[in-house]
Image 1 (cartoon, rainbow, N blue to C red):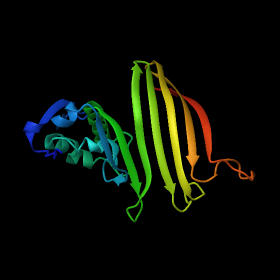
Image 2 (tube, one colour; image 1 turned 90 degrees about the vertical axis):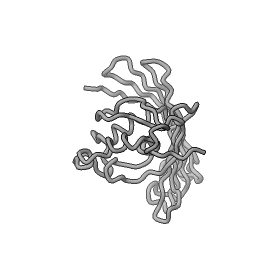
Image 3 (tube, helix red, strand yellow; image 1 turned 60 degrees about the horizontal axis):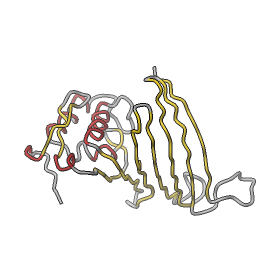
Image 4 (cartoon, helix red, strand yellow; image 1 turned 120 degrees about the vertical axis):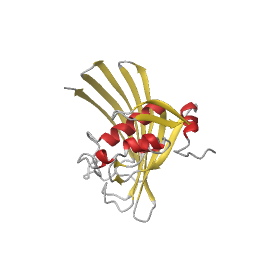
Length: 211
């Protein structure tokens, strides 16, 4: 077991430069690992938008120099660094860069209720860069709708998704995906049906035009 100490310069290595301009310096042990995984929980964050995910790397295993560059007063004072805001959030952008550059491959995040019980779990199983024009995505989620307040029926819900990101040009993406949804009770189907199913399949495709 290795205890990360952000002020231990000898244990750090520079892996790049943050989008905001600061040095991206993280724990050498993590960077040299064959597989880097992380776990955490998601909740609104005062200036990163949301906690969880990429925060396992920055600030999680980063040098104090990188943390201070990312958590600077200029960024914290920005109207774009507020709870629930990710778009154009400079702190969030730095964190995404650090996680990607450090080689973070797998994340498990949970959501807690007011009693600190786990009520949902989310993980990005894999993003495989098969080709410069093709990514393969795999994702899994679990959610416990304790009171039926979100879905309408109290049950445990699960989903598995596999999709492609086809990028024929720099401004155009095609994203087909297939998804399986399951539940601990028979909840899928029209309300008029007397017998619902415990799972369902969905196929979808969208197109993203960048400009």
